[in-house]
Length: 150
Figure 1 (tube, rainbow, N blue to C red):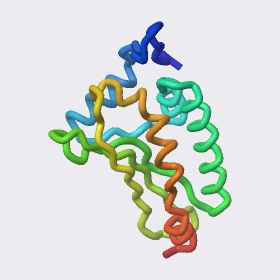
Figure 2 (cartoon, rainbow, N blue to C red; figure 1 turned 90 degrees about the horizontal axis):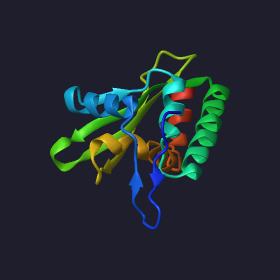
Figure 3 (spheres, rainbow, N blue to C red; figure 1 turned 45 degrees about the vertical axis):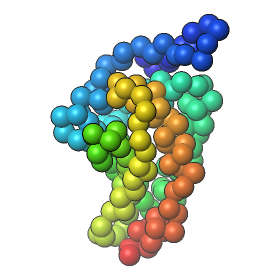
Figure 4 (tube, rainbow, N blue to C red; figure 1 turned 45 degrees about the horizontal axis):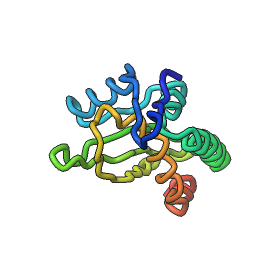
């Protein structure tokens, strides 16, 4: 993990390192309108850059639980990242797709839309928090439908 933000003494302000992954995410969102993590190591690196350690731990625990649940249903998460909804308004979505191993049906796209009120370079510092919010709203009925071939 490259650099957890540190809280400046006596304030609620964080100093966040300008990491290569954070730059890569911001650049991709500006230039292509989307960014997808390419490995589990990248996801864990991004989780580790959360403002709060508790967010990191909760995100890691929930992604492991979710991955296990998907595997038990014969599914997997394919695309996982961010998409630009409206750059001018600062609206983005944490997005992922769920596919069935057994069926040749369309994947389920899930988008958790949010408005970013910090510079885009700091988006990585909110990734764990965004995932935690998204995981709390997992559309399990829709995932079961994909797992069943619908």
